[in-house]
Amino acid sequence: MLCSPGCCADKAGQEDKVESKAALDNAVSVEQDEMVPMQSPDVDPPKDDIFGSTVVPEKNPEGEDLIGDWQTKKGKYSVNRDKSGQLIFKEDRSPELILVGILKKEGDCMQAEIKDELNKGATYGHLRMKREGDNIRSFFRFTEDEPWDDVGYIASRQ
Image 1 (tube, rainbow, N blue to C red):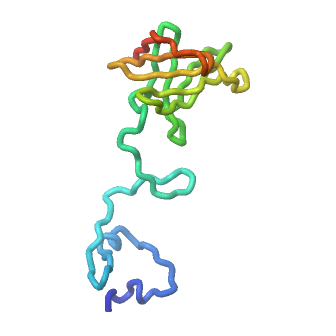
Image 2 (cartoon, rainbow, N blue to C red; image 1 turned 45 degrees about the vertical axis):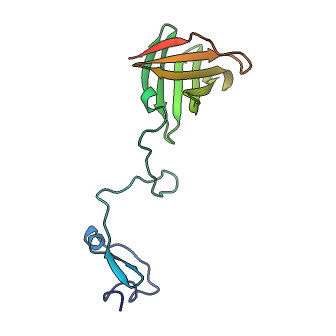
């Protein structure tokens, strides 16, 4: 017999469930008539918000070094992650403008189409940013057919 009493062979047709961590610690994997002790994880892996499935977190997600509050000579903006993990640029100049965009990797930069939330999400322009030491250099253009600004703005962390 491959399994011990009360194991999978005795529970045919019953739903499998783990009773406790101790049961996991004593579990074995049966492979080709060979019993191998299984290792239980030290911590529970994170769960996907939508389906509850196990997800493997990225070790260094793109743009992680951009997260925070930043100041340029033009104003302040922030970069944060939303609930789904997207990198979000936001510059609040209310009551005139609230500029937002989802930053995505494009070459050696992060880039976003910038929309004005106060103008029904109309496209305001396009932003490109990258780290330069402790700062961020950002470039802007109003339309996709314009060239990028060659100088850009330097932002310092607040």
